View (cartoon, rainbow, N blue to C red):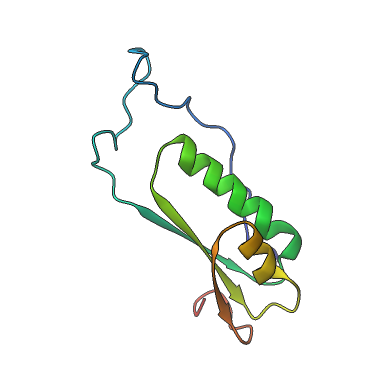
Length: 102
């Protein structure tokens, strides 16, 4: 069972303050707090990097200050290394403990 989900690339156009037709995002003017995205992963070496990059693209388009954390749940492959290459913060469990502990 995969521990990551597909992130929709459908999104509204980026906010452009020069274009009065583009609606102002809810967080314009500093009202939005930074967000942390936590991704539990187990043996997801091939999928974790693209997933982190897709999430980051969406957050950047919407100008959301963020951090992306991958919790490697005792993977036997290179999940943690792949997440690091994608510039995610990585927390590692020594053994597989499931979603709740992660």
